[in-house]
Length: 276
Image 1 (tube, one colour):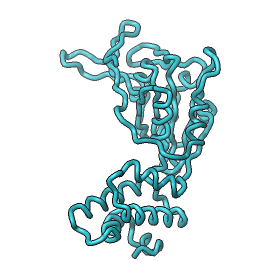
Image 2 (spheres, rainbow, N blue to C red):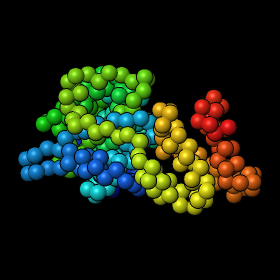
Image 3 (cartoon, rainbow, N blue to C red):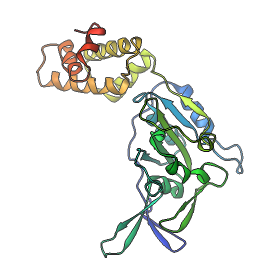
Image 4 (cartoon, rainbow, N blue to C red):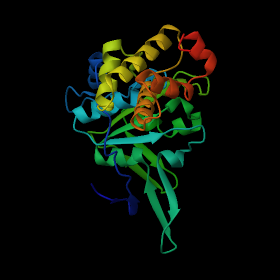
């Protein structure tokens, strides 16, 4: 993996891809949908720029990483926020050790140049000004322009783009001219119980069977009550409960899980779920 590249006389320092990603377990239909969106039928065909929708913690980023790995593409992740600026998305100037200016390519630009996959995480937290800088990348032109570095960067043919979007109130409306470029939309819901079990077992292979069963019971009750607890929450509860149990700070698996839940779930919700 290169550390720098020169474009139009400007040296860009490249970001490095993600080293590891959690395994994708179950829900093969959404993986197939994303792979279809990213496929190219002919050399002239272009991959689509899908968006993954769903509650926080249902596995959107993990799904995108798994699709990239299936295509043997390096994975780059850029976390979007309400403060994300075009410079953050493209090229940012920083002070070099010799006192000059060093141009740092974002994960997005680095993925474009390396022919990797860029996951724009929580894209609907970005403002319209930030999205506007990506408009030419998301259509047939496949390039971005950095005003800071004064260069135009074209995407490698193997470059793939996907954005994840959470369903919550702290987000912006995506402008229509960008919305139409982010197709298809792929929705991720809670996994089925057997899939949730497989995910927990895969990511916490040392988990005690009883602890695992109690955590699964909590997740299913939370889903039935339409509470916003996902497998990510289940993983954190499971890990903490196992730490409590290994330190002998709980007398039973049930007590260890309850200790973890008391630190993660409001008491009124635990009462509503009939857990206390």
